[in-house]
Image 1 (spheres, rainbow, N blue to C red):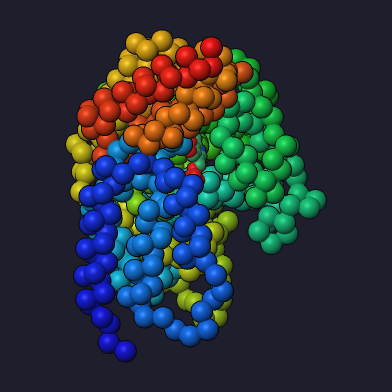
Image 2: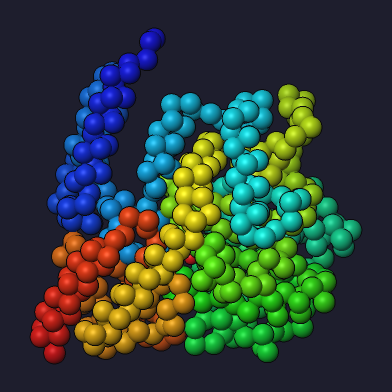
Length: 457
Ligand SMILES: Cc1ncc(COP(=O)(O)O)c(C=O)c1O
């Protein structure tokens, strides 16, 4: 079967049209559009094959309008990056290559790209060259991977082979987290067998930073999980002090730095990341602040052998070579070559591009905070990076404003509860957000506040 390149040309035209329209379309699709997608794409599996052109046409007709516009700079929900042009284009190439990145022999290109991006990221984060790394789907799996390496190292020290003998009967491990730990880290603790509830929670301050003065006693069978960038406030734990205390006791320090670790790229915000390089393992996302196409995360482990010990397998049909074999460091075996988009994004930005991306999004966040204050909102956090938390007064008013903004469709913000207060979250994480987007979004927010104030009163 020869490949039909005109199909790819057709896809390029459709994708370009999508990206153009994304700038003017409502950010979240109306319910009727989503219903139409269910009807148009659903039904029984066809008995016979369909033409590839027809398949693509159906996707473009029904799925594209039911997407959330994540690529146009006015989606401020969660912590979603947009995909940089180089990253989107690289993802297309990677799809054409269809590489399995498990082993070097299956994809030398994927293995080389992983080597390169791991070197770049270690360098950006100020980590030693020997630090081990894995490219995974996102921070949740990166947290899982770092914790599995920690589990391997601490139990190996205690004379226990956890990969072969499991956790039943193993020497107990204590896990210490801040009270504002991200829910994905708690999930990862459950997956790795430590239990979601079996953790010691340390009180935090009003920004969600772990209080070093409230740290419980630590020992050499403790994992202390610190956070670089709280999902709500953007705040950073005092890593230098916490790491020093943990290491004095022989404990392992794991960092959840899903987006915050990238603050290191900017001379303006680098001070926030001070001390995080002292840790033993790090989890971060590339699909957040660095704007790599979904999905893309990184786990890094100072002791590469601990990571390899937790993840490697042996089989007669697989003889590892001298160089790094990707799947010896990852939870998965077969996996897509996600280093392609990651390499492309970092290569296209370079150091100054990364710094500008961080600074620009932080400036936009400050402009949002000022604009929201001017319309009477209370900003609940110190806007240290790209996250803003706004309260419009009573919880029902804040919730009504969020719903009205979402319905208006100019931009999209989600809600949260922050230390007993109902708040709107504004996360400026996309490269595509412009000052004009901020102004348009603030105008929509102002309309929503005025309408809701008069009806909720
Ligand atoms: C601090 C933190 N950790 C972990 C995660 C989970 O990231 P992902 O959804 O990419 O797995 C997030 C997501 O926002 C986060 O903010």
